[in-house]
Image (tube, rainbow, N blue to C red):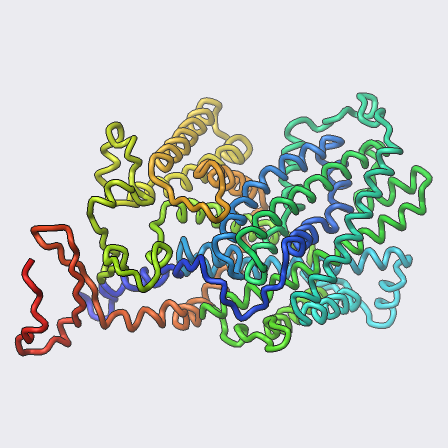
Amino acid sequence: MVRGLPSTASLARFCQKLNRLKPLEESTMETSLQRCLSTLDLTLLGVGGMVGSGLYVLTGTVAKQMAGPAVLLSFAVAAVASFLSALCYAEFGARLPRTGSAYLFTYVSMGELWAFLIGWNVLLEYLIGGAAVARAWSGYLDAMFNHRIHNFTEAYVGTWQVPLMANYPDFLAAGIIILASVFISCGARVSSWINHTFSVVSLLIILFVIILGFILARPHNWSAEEGGFAPFGFSGIMAGTATCFYAFVGFDVIAASSEEARNPKQAVPIAIIISLGLAAGAYILVSTVLTLMVPWHSLDPDSALADAFYRRGYSWAGFIVAAGSICAMNTVLLSSLFSLPRIVYAMAVDGLFFQVFAQVHPRTQVPMVGILVFGGLMTFLALLLDLEALVQFLSIGTLLAYTFVATSIIVLRFQRAPPSSASGPASPDPRVKDYHSFSDHIQLVGTEQASAPEPGQLRPALRPYLGFLGRYSPGAAVAWALGMLVASAITLACVLVFGVSVLHLPYWGYILLLLLSSIMFLLSLLVLGAHQQRRQQDTFQIPMVPLTPALSILLNICLMLKLSYLTWLRFSIWLLIGLMVYFGYGIWHSKENQQALPELTTTRYVVFPSTNLEETVQTVQPPSQLPSQDPSPMEQPTSP
């Protein structure tokens, strides 16, 4: 071997470090945080995270520029796409009642490096999302006072022209974040009650808008004289769907709060489904009444709802709409500030981020350092930066997290159950103990395993027809099929998005690539469906796996490919910074890395006697530590 180059064994160990998994501890309820959130608390957290400024701004923008009155179909399709991702979060949140959301879900199924990168992107999502909402809140309030706050700041502070920075410092937005951080630092119960207040007021105002809007509805506004129901056709509806999808971003706050839920196995799935249903109903109904009140082509994209009531002669209703928009933006800001320090806390507890963020205040039981540091960073972003060029970070980071969570669901379903879930640590049956070697887990063969196939094995009913798949070790065919599923989903999405506009393929080439990628996608689904899955009766599980998460993966990749190349460039720079943090700190301080070091001193293996199926477990020391003399008679293994 060339001197100075790493050996093959050292490279293999390094790759194993990057892909090591966090142990799956599903039943534990112990936590240093306070379990005080009910199903209602989680539901209103989810509603507050989704129903925000998008309801008052996004509906008018999509209706006027993309879909017309068919904006309600755009919201409906986006709700279905979001529902697929929400189901994945619901299953993970119920099985793993720990804070961390997409970061934790990826850690227990995909590996450490991927988990860190997902957590790193979720941090950016919450930072920019909270700062953007604070600036929108400030701008809306400033508009209500005829821009007096803006004029005062420019007159006494001044302006500047710097790329990526705002024209003037937004002290009001910074003050809003500081005030919200104070409330969040008082504990989960206090912040939950504040979120309750704003969410209930926001929902009541939305109900008022829907009722009064239907009273003032004019069906003529959907007629052909006004452009018809879908003036931009099917392409306009799908373009609106890509934008409306981001209106439902925010339900992951429920999964991030599962460690503070009283009964997460029931509360998390129920809260995610109900909150997403309420948000979808609100968006669809509001967009319906908005386009029925006034013609879609005359909407004001910046303040569509308030302007619609003003034009119908109900100016007093415009003030109610303004109050509702402020309450809605407050709930989104509280959701971002509530989730952000908890993601940092989860990463710090695992050793992948600086340990100071793992400290919890003894009285309020919240990660106070994370609130102070990242709340301050969010304040800085809202004070100085022009966030319009950075808002698309929300899209790509969220979609990537959704894709990894959907993939993790498939991995988790075909993983073997951890031994601790089958029996307690004091189980007298040696066949359910955990056996390790230096390379991998050793599969035990016996009559009980043959009658009850484990996850990852070919289904017994299909073995006569798919015997060639049964020749592989358990999980090998599943791993190859999952890789083929992701690769074919990327190829299929590229063909659908770029096949005509970018690649300039001939018609026959487009159809051929579309058929090949679709066939590969369906074949991988069939191979996965032919293998045994892991079933649990006491927790929520997604129906139709692997079809449901596979559709979520495909939709998320299609939406990611619609983002601009500048977004991908900025995203790549952020990933490079994250890799520097991981390889500079996280990989060395990881809790899994610290626990792996003592395991190298002991090897456990299984001896299969020739006359029966009883396993004899022996524990030996590494060869370098064996004594030179012969073992004593007490240490000799008995004859079978």
